[in-house]
Image (cartoon, rainbow, N blue to C red; front, side, top):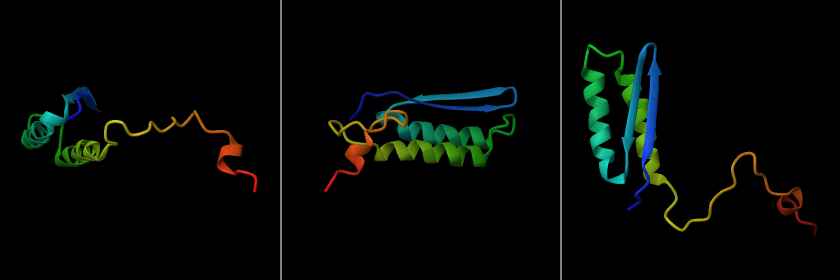
Length: 86
C-alpha cells in the first residue's frame, strides 16, 4: 500500500473544497463527497461529487510501486529513440 497523499481540489465561486486522502482513506473520501453533495447549504452538487469521485477511483489504477516513471510532457525522448534507423 502506498503512503502517498493525494490532493483533490475544487473551487466554486467563493467556496474552496480540498480533500486529502491516501489509499487507506479512499472509501472515506468517496463517502464525504456524497455527504457534501447532499448538503443543500453547499454549492457542491452531485455532478461535482461524480467528477471528483472518478478522479479518486482513477488513482486506484495508478502504476504499482517499482514501475518505470514515464517522462513528463515536457521531457520528450529524442526523435531517434522513437524512430530508430533500420
